[in-house]
Amino acid sequence: NLLTGQEKRSVPFATHTAATVEMMPEGSKVDVCVIDEIQLIGDADRGYAWTRALLGAEAETVHVCGGLEGRDAVRRIAEECGDDFEVVEYDRFNDLRVQDEPLNKNMDYRSGVREGDCVVAFSKNDIFKIRSEIEQSNPDLKCCVIYGSLPPETRASQAKLFNDPNSPYKVLVASDAVGLGLNLNIRRVVFHTIYKSNGKDIIRLPHSAVKQIAGRAGRRSSPYKFGEVAVRRKEDLKWVKRCLGTEIEQVKSAGLLPTSSHVSAFAGASGEQEMSKILTSFDEGAKLRGGYFMCKHGEMVKNATRIDEEAAAAGGVLTAEDRFVLAAAPANGNDPVAQEMVARFARGVAAGRTVGPNITVPSERAESFEKLGELCAKFNHLDLYLWLAQRFNSNALEVQSALTRKQVLVHMIQDALTRASDEGGLTLKHDYRRTDERFRKMFRQ
Image 1 (cartoon, rainbow, N blue to C red):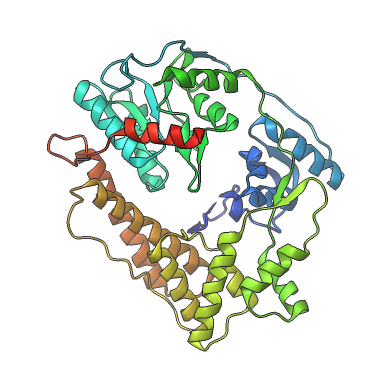
Image 2: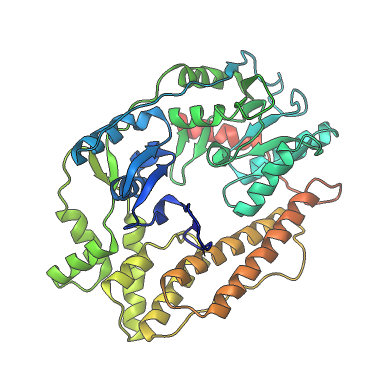
C-alpha cells in the first residue's frame, strides 16, 4: 500500500505499507516500522512529523535510519517510553575525496565538467543557466535537471536518465533535492556555491546539508570506487572540508505541533471559535519540558485568520477540526492561487458543497522557462487540491479529473525539459556569477 498526502493506493492482501512521514498510519499494529531521515526530528518546520511517527509507531521493533546527529534525541525518547535502545553505525563503503583545486580557474562550467558529475545549485535560474553552459561548451555532455518544484515523476525520470549508462545524459545539475530520496550514480559532487536563500535570509549551507549532499558521490550502489567533492570557487573549499571533517552537532530537541484533536479539545474547553486565536492561545499556554520545542506555525496562524474570515462570509459552519486542517494545508503563503484554493474549500465545506480543482491545463507547449515554471506551479496546485480533497468530501469525478490533469502536466514538463537542451529551445537570460556575488555580500553584512 502507498499513503501520501495526496494519494492512497490499496493493494489487496498487501503485507507492507509505505507512507510519507506525515501520513504514517496510527493505530495499526505491525511487526516492524522503519522511519527514515530521523535527523529531521529537529527540523524547525517539520520536526513534529518525525516525533509523532516515533511515538505513534505500534511495532515490536522500530528501525530509525538517518544521520547520527539524531541519536541522542531518539535515545531520550526511547528512555522516556521505557523502550530498549540500540545503536548500529554504518561506515561508508567507498572513500569520499575532496579536490584541493576548484573546477577551473575561470569559475564557470565551460571546462572541467566530466561524466558522472552532479553540479549542485540553489535556484532554478542558476540550474538552467549552468545546464546551458555545460551543454554548449561540451556537446557530448547532455544534462539532466532535478529541483524541488518538479513533479516527483519528473524527478524520478530525470534520475533514471542520468543513471542509465546508455543514455546521452551524462551530467546532473540539481538543487539540494538530490540529498534526499533519490538513488543516483554520481561520481563527483560540485558545489556551485555554499550560499543560498532560505526564503527570508541569505545563509551559508548548514553543516548537515554539506554532508548530506556531498555524501551522494561514490555511493556503494554506484559504479564508482570512490566519490569526489569539488567547488566552483576556491574560497568555499575551507567550509566544505570543515563540514566533511567534523561530526554534526547532536539534535538537542524534538519538534512538536498540536494535532486536530488537541486543538478541537482546547477549543471546546476555552469556548473560542476563531482558529487563529485558538492556535495563538494554545502556543502561549503550552508548557514544554526539556527535549522538545514547538515547531514554527506562524504561516498556519496566518492561514487560519483568512479561513475564519471565509467561514464567516459563507454563513456556514466550520468545526474547529475543519479549520485546523484547512490552516495546516501545504499552501504556499506567497502563492495567491494556492491561497484561493484553500479559501474555496473553506467556503465549500462551510456551505456543505463539494469543490472542484478549477486548474486549467495549457493547450500549447511551454516556449520559455517562465512557462515551464507555470506548468510546475499548476502541478503543485493540483497536488494541493488532492491533499484537500482527501480530507473533505469531494466528487470522485473531480478527483479523477485532477489526477488526469496532473499526468498531462507531467508529460508537458518532461517535453519542456527535453527541448531545453535543443538548439532553438527554451532560452534564459541570467548571470549566476552576479547572483552569487550578491548573496555573498548580503551574507557578510
